[in-house]
Length: 149
Image (cartoon, rainbow, N blue to C red; front, side, top):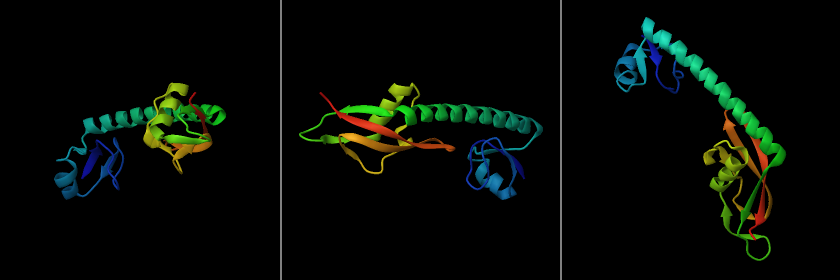
């Protein structure tokens, strides 16, 4: 049976694609859960429009992620944190704080789950943070932690 997927389905396809699946899988699983529609002339036209919109949105998101990556790799981010004697922090710098600093620096809202810390940041100094803002844009940037005065 030919169907149009309304959302991404693992092992089947992405939203907006027209795929051929087993009749029972379509009738019993995909269509009742709202994951797909039976392919008609109207739904196929709608699927192509959805695919074009998705490609345009993906291009915009990738360009935005590349711009943020260029800016962060070049400049990095500075975060002020409370520190005890020496270089040890009270607590640690979290990905939420880094995401807020990146958003303040670039103006682009960054999700904390897109940032990865190899180890928690608990000292003053320079630390490397990995980011994957888009499936095709992965980079590392520098986070400078300074003592709050």
